[in-house]
Amino acid sequence: MKNYISIDEINHSYTSRPEAAVSAADSAFRQQLQDLAEDIRSHVRSCPIILIAGPSGSGKTTTAKMLEEIFDTSGMETHTIPLDNYFRTIPKEDYVHIENGTIDLESPERLDEELLNDHLRKLIACEPVTLPYYDFAATTSRSSGVILQRKPDEPIILEGIHALNPEVIRIPQNQRSAVYVSVQTHVSCGDVSMHPLYLRLMRRMIRDHKFRGRSAMQTLGKLHDVERGKQQYIKPFRRYATHEIDTFFSYELGVYRSFLLPELEKAPFCEEIDLVCSMLRAAAPVDSALIPKTALIQEFLGGSIYQ
Image 1 (cartoon, rainbow, N blue to C red):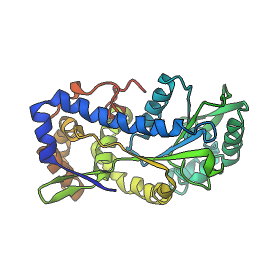
Image 2 (cartoon, rainbow, N blue to C red; image 1 turned 180 degrees about the horizontal axis):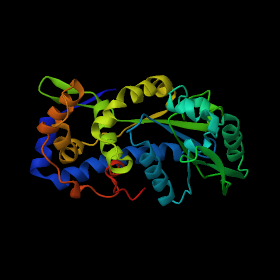
Image 3 (cartoon, helix red, strand yellow; image 1 turned 45 degrees about the vertical axis):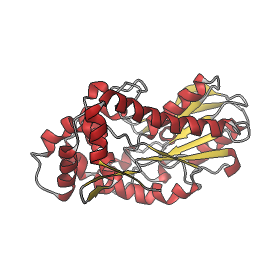
Image 4 (cartoon, one colour; image 1 turned 120 degrees about the vertical axis):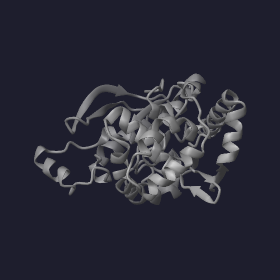
């Protein structure tokens, strides 16, 4: 179900009582996770695997860590495994294919599916496994040296873009919960409605600038490829989700305004930038200092306690 909110509704909250509005938005998101945890907890012994997937910029990594924290705090030791650690080594002779784009770095074929599913079956049976680690700089799979053996009441969270793909994760459906994470709320301004993909774009623009040295326009240049990957590898498997989490926060546009608007207003005109700028200009500013370090969007701002 699509959710809608107007920029006027948002501005009213953040111009009158910004601290309370930030707290309310964070509490509402945590309540989603609490409800999810409560449902999973009721059948974790028979269904111990929690799969979390979502598109780039959805906040699925922090969502997984926050869910783990909720379980841990309740006394249920939980283990989170990034699906990326099951990538296969890319041989050096294939580097040229990466550069010319003939190797799809997001393809599920990059995963060592046999090792992954062998580990999942053993973990469900409470047998020990030695977890792999993927060195992105060297494009090489290594052993982490970490041995994981879960106890009967301990969940395993597996997070990654292919986590809902039944051809990748081949354990029985009755042994797994499947969570689809994404921005699902549309923001309207007058007659214009902003699709959630633009909020995910803004998140990536800030993250890429802070952590990858990319300009906002360079991130925009990858929008087509990112959304193609979503349509090809993520969206078709959303129907397998047993739960959905909306990672929209009403204060986001107000926070992102000061980070993005100065640069984007100098950028060459295009429809995407025009839409983003119009939304940012309409949003009442929200001081980023009001956003707690425990908030999901700190994953993109760079101040998360979960990083």
